[in-house]
Amino acid sequence: MKRFLLTIALAGSLMACKNTGENKNEAGESTVSEAMENNTANQPKVNYVPIDSDEALIAASLMAAPEESRDGCKVIGYNMAGEFVTFREGDNEFIVLADNPQQSGFNAACYHKSLEPFMARGRELRAEGKTGPEIFDIREEEAKSGKLDMGKPGATLHIYYGESDQYNPETNEVEGAHYRYVVYLPFATAESTGLPERPVGPNHPWIMNPGTHRAHIMISPLPEDKE
Image 1: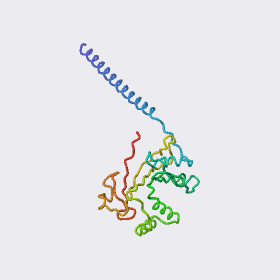
Image 2: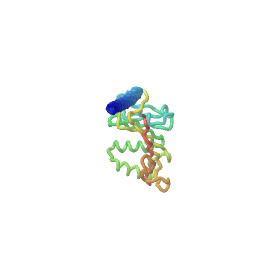
Image 3: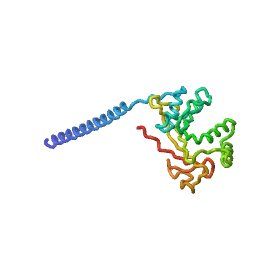
Image 4: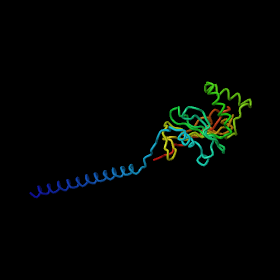
């Protein structure tokens, strides 16, 4: 009889422990779940909207320029009507080429004004229907002959690009956009710069088109973590 009562008491104790453990697990899981829900609820919701006006196009494209220089940049590019225009004149060293609203995604550029002859020549040749390789060969010949001004060595192109054409009207940031930088050093080589001709790892700088008029250093920063 004593053995029977002892067995019942032991079983009851084990059941109580099991229930206590389950209750703790349930309480812990509930706490974690509530914390995750609270964190999600506390995250501000970004109201991304389509770029559907020249004003929005300019504002988003200016993100390609250094923040302290945006107010003084000249801005050019295709407007919402598909016309290539000067949106506004500038008074500093930068020219912003706005995103083309007729193309998918987003791609705006900001470059040192000394690069304008090189950039303008490329736009002119594309308008004539020349292909990428043809444009390269023509500008290579013109740069070597001195006909084409390649700008100041080290002049930089800033690119702000992404797959989305949605932007935040409060910050002018484009959803998921990233930065890339191009430093032009006409006719530079791996030997003259000490840079490799291909990246040795993700986001490492390297020299592209070495030995040509279009030689440039490619710099692709790591995407900013928004979380």
